[in-house]
Length: 138
Image 1 (cartoon, rainbow, N blue to C red):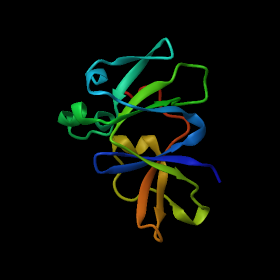
Image 2 (image 1 turned 30 degrees about the vertical axis):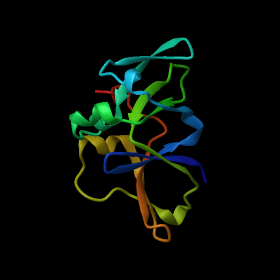
Image 3 (image 1 turned 60 degrees about the vertical axis):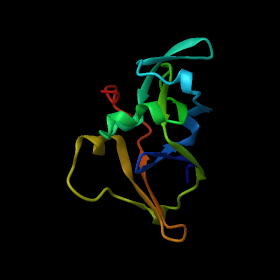
């Protein structure tokens, strides 16, 4: 099975395909802003508050501790910087731990392949698709 980076944004846990993660960076207070771009390795890349993308509270932007430089698909396009709250480590879910998304379909459902549930660790997280829609930033 594939390896994933387990992250948290507010009360939502997510698994990002690890091969699409370029870097995790700590955000200094002065580098946090509401701008929609960032400088990464001398390149201007799109920046977004992942909480906003997931339709969470917009007031938490100034408190995000980390950024994940992430390629939303397998094209040669520049990655994006997603602002998040926590990095929880690498995960290797088994097939038995992966499930279809429950409940009513929402806009956010289009971003996920399913949900990972690890009963031994008491954790669950949404699995982010390896090919995100071009308009996932809003």
